[in-house]
Length: 167
Image 1 (spheres, rainbow, N blue to C red):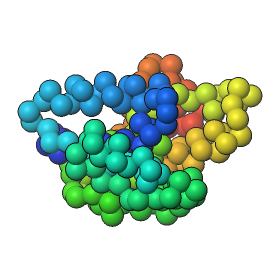
Image 2 (image 1 turned 135 degrees about the vertical axis):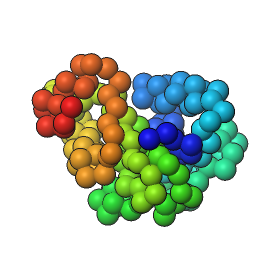
Image 3 (image 1 turned 90 degrees about the vertical axis):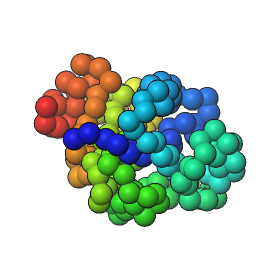
């Protein structure tokens, strides 16, 4: 399928400093902006205090204004309820999420990028909060993703072996 319109989840860019997946996401956005055959739209789930900064960088950003104290519970509810991306954005051929949300899409394909599977393969190196977040994300990926992209061969193998995702 050729993607003419793509919604990119910018939620990982709300962590400061920007994490590894955030840097990967920024590089991907820069590359996609060079293409004239893809229209980009943006979505983010972030605290409302960050919205002005995010909207100045990404015009047309679709983002609910969530008080900071409710951002974690909002993320959990949106993931668990499987609210489709179209509840927040216009229709697109694809929805690209990176390590935070993997929402279903009614109008296009849901694409999940996974940077790291260590919460699954080496939980002793992780905080319980990270393990729980990864478990919810993995459940969401299994339920909603039409395509899973691992950033490395190692992560791909971890997802196939430990998470039982199809290759």
